[in-house]
Length: 242
Length: 201
Image 1 (spheres, rainbow over the protein chains, first blue to last red):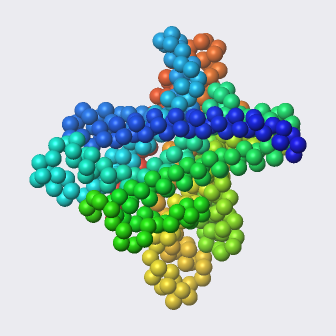
Image 2 (image 1 turned 180 degrees about the vertical axis):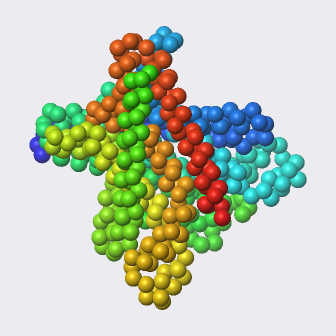
Image 3 (image 1 turned 90 degrees about the horizontal axis):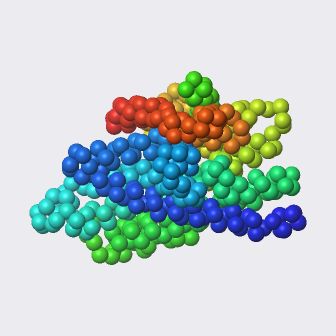
């Protein structure tokens, strides 16, 4: 127990690295998901082909393999050495971005056809249609699934343990080796992961609630920590047509 | 290349056995969850497994396990339990999708529990969730490189060895990536077929 108290700063450092990787990965994955997801809904066959190739390739290869490729193969192939941290974020972002792109694509496709026809009859340009009609609705639809992906990404960051970055998993294993106290050390590590996951889920729930409020819908209620967020009162409608 | 193929074989074995474990255990968990108090305790554990990374679970169990248990066994068991937490949710959604009237009908006929589950609920529940379960097979296949962390010599570990021996990282890691695609892309296509067949009824 004393040991744990002494080593507390190392847990914090490890958790901080995990959080940094997670946030970096989320940002990259989000950008990629949006870009390739929207690309996947464009009429032109080439755009869709590019999106499909990206999705299939990075969904098919383990993030860890991609990470190894960036760290070991890329310097040999090109003579260009990526920072380990950057390589890790790149691999994680590419991987989860591929899943995200599918979510974006299917959410956009789920927007009712009549809405698209309406934008055509209003003579809206493609960017206008996307920005004003399609994306706000698709956004509300994709958020719950994004929530799962965000937690997946956070968990996936633990693989950097294998390339020697000192994240939470690495710190836990190192402290285990130093102290021999496996169970307490890992309980702390598991609890920290759990905590980070809950915070992430909470944030996504906030976004979900906002998106649904804007559309004048009631978000699905959630139990646990999410239950703290009460759904908006019935009948509150803000802006945009249903 | 032959080395890499033997590594791939280990990867596939681990995936196969782990998946069988995840499927059976997941089903048991999904059924147990319907038991009031016990169910919530199990649910909490599942939630915990699902929100913490597989790598650290592997390292944890490996550190605690007795020395005579092989890393492969530990890896497969942890992989199986980890994914059971996911498949349990899939089964649950399938079970909840079975119409209430079916349960009532089973009770009206005073069928025993085993028949209710075996002949009425599960056949309907599982049919609908086959594609979702299939997706976890691919996800699991992609997670087997993590067994590397506890010293299982699977595909990635072999690649690492070959790469450092001959200093041919580009070729080996590129081949590993391609091998992954060779297995997972056809599986994904297969799952899409299943989806058309079972879900869009």
